[in-house]
Length: 455
Figure 1 (cartoon, rainbow, N blue to C red):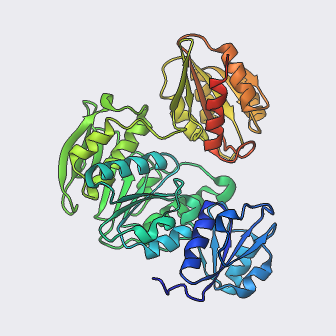
Figure 2: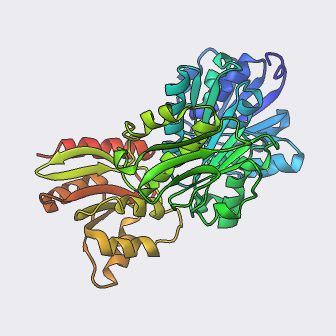
């Protein structure tokens, strides 16, 4: 491995976490690396002292004149002129996830999906750590580029890796155990059509061997159209027993059954859904998916149960951040699609004051708007999406109380004026954060901060 990159000329587009981690790895293994970013003010300090060529403020086609491999970070579109020209010249494309998977000595569990992939990834990692201890590595699109840990990963370890559609659309390898949590409209501003988005997600399965496993949602219409192999496990909320999979039975119990040819057969009740700390049917599905994945990787029913009934969730995903004057405030900043917004709303029976907005992904909103009219006491719209949502809600009777704000901070103040004991204030935006914040995590952190600053 130490010589495989010797003398290779690699151009990396995008100098965020993935790009800088990949640059550091490739340089350490002998590659000649050029790192290019459209931001002319990228912080170069993390790579200080490395023999690295920087090209900032543009991606000139001249970068390809000395290029054996072009690597794209996750946020870099594949229709950029330099990427199209690379394809025309026959220069291969790759990314940090592909380089990691090709070099990783340990078996990989890969997880993707339109929603739930981060929670499922985290749950799976926690279950496997409960079973096997420190020999489990969790990362990928979840925030930690796993290539930074590659030299410490041993053959006997297990890797749990979250993968986005942006990463998958360039990849030509698949994990040993692959999971798609669901496929609903998302990132159409990037992929253009639902067919292209589905094709990107499906690539997590396309390069599996006959010995590899796939875990799919039996309740998701798009997932049931995917190719099925004898080594397919399912998860479902329907009370129908599965030979290989996990389901919610008629008594509200989470069941797991893995039969031959599963490498670790198991047949057990994990817990009752009332024992889960996580809210909502979508989170029951996440636990069922994680149970399948961890079970296939060798976890016991005891380890699965231990994590399932104690796991309190991932930050910015229906996270309770405050209780004020008899009302609860929840941060669901991860909800960057109408589908995720609806999942959050369905978790509550109490009157909801919804904070909705951000930047649109060009996704259908009709169903979300209907649910908002049914379940929301008030909707406070903010950001670039705000005027569209406010206008649509006001056109149909009976509308909830609608308020239009320029910023999320202003929306928090309006919510504080409207809230009464017994209410829920829910930040579940339905749009991305990029109109005002670096990412959904920053948006959620600022929301939490502004809630705590209220008098």
